[in-house]
Length: 168
Image (tube, rainbow, N blue to C red):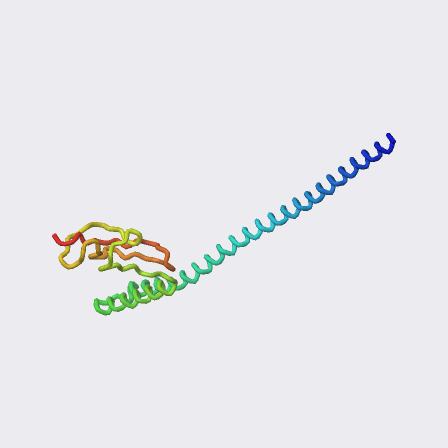
């Protein structure tokens, strides 16, 4: 009977050890899957970051190509062979270059913030000074000193403004 009891105890110990080994194997398999998944995710993250930088570079390349056309027009306008005494023609040429420049910036998503007459918003405007006004209500923008800009509703630069302090 003692022998049977020992065999049962040994059998139970063996079963426990087998279960432990199986658990350890399952744990090793799960750990291996985890490490592989983690490595794949790191590779994905690295690849995505690289692709994003390439996309930004491509977008910048397109913008710079368009802006180089504006630069070429400025270079031609100031070239020695194009200098004449005709100030009106020069001004007309500068206006055309400005329109070309504005069109390119708009095409690439730049929005101008011109808050003249609007209520002062510290999130979009930077107050340079207050000035009394008989016609513009207190807290509204009287004059834009420097325009602000947004791209796709993200603020790039605040508008620098003069704000009304109301009637004197």
